[in-house]
Amino acid sequence: MNDYQRREFSEKKEEFQEIVAELTKPLGKPSKKLKIWIGFLLFIIGMATISYINQIVNGLSVTDMRDISSWGLYIADFVFLIAVSLIGSLITAILKLANIKWATPLTRISEIIAVGGLIAALLIIVVDMGRPDRLWHIFIYGRLQSPILWDIIVVNTYLIISILLLYLPLIPDIAIMRKNEIGKSTRMEKIYKILSLGWQGSDDQHKLLKKGLAVLMIIIIPVAFSIHTVTSWLFASTLRIGWDSTIFGPYFVSGAFMVGTAAVITAMYIIRWQYKYENYITDYHFNMVGKLLVLTSLLYLYFNLNEYLVPAYKIKSHEGDHLSALFTGDFSTMFWFVQLGGMILPIILMIFKFFRKPLPIFFISIAIILGAFFKRFLIITPTLLHPFLPIQNYPDSYRHYTPTIAECMITFGSIAGVLLIITLFIRIFPIIPIAETAHDREISNEIINS
Image 1 (tube, helix red, strand yellow):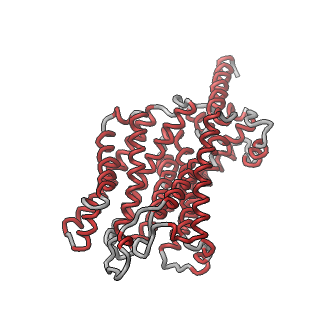
Image 2 (cartoon, rainbow, N blue to C red):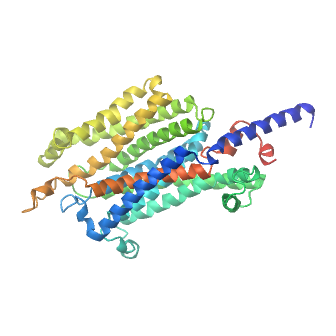
Image 3 (spheres, rainbow, N blue to C red):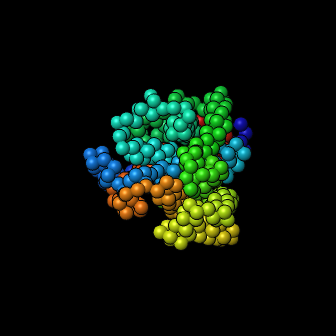
């Protein structure tokens, strides 16, 4: 090695050490603000747990779900969480397979959002069951013809693959943290040692890891599409106004990509602001993900037009009642917020580059996320409140559905659970890939392993 090569090696080594120091900064001693944030999330989860215990003791009567509106806020929350989780396949699989280099800092963010959303979605389904002690009946007595059984299968399959896609790229980073004595003299040292699986950074290990990730990224795409397609079949296979549609599969998938992209942008902004990651999550990343959000939003807008334009044109009697409730009735305020504030206005704003800058697109993404949650509520509740066959002699209160405090508290608890998973993950592992970032900056494995 000549003098030039030694100097270049030294400079790259110094650059790599700087990357390691910056990307492992959140793993240090927790700040007072972080402790308060974790305490707040634990408080919300604790209140949700108390509400759920009360629900188990007193039954689903603590909710406002009745014979007509047998699904409510819980199922809306489930569909929302499943939608958010779909972003893992979009960022990690589709963009990475397309060799989109700018997606590197976002892959781990999207995957932990996916894993957290899936875990919370599975828990909220158990909450929605009146008898959670009979959960095992699904696996023992479930029929293959039932979309519910297939929904359980694809959700769990997607969760397993998402965990693997989150964990495998972490192995080189965990080995780097061990080598640089990050977390030394703490109980995390033993955990890092186990999770690194004896990684040495050899060429054979890199080839094996690359092949494994390629297989998982290819597999997760059809699984991700099927998870929301099967979920949509739970609605579309039921002969009800508002659900009787052949486009529900792609309609749900497009909506999931939109809200998932908005969730990633929100997480990007908070992580960049909290940990001063302007050198890793740049304005360029916000601009590119903003363009992706415009694309997914336009696609979702197209399906929204299809959802309402055709029934409004035919205006059958039952469809007319359903559309009137949405356009001018009890749900009109929420409906127009979803359409205008959660989709049309954000699309118009994001066409202009200024609104794809970090702060503007952060607030736009918040509006899209809120709109997406209310949209799931609108998919479920108005349809159930307009049955084909009118039920005789039931109280007038059954004609309406308003989530109770218990339902809201448990729903808030599920969202807090997702945020807690993301927060704890950032406290234990680097949220931006170290090894991949080093490779993107042309730092060789020899320097990384030295």
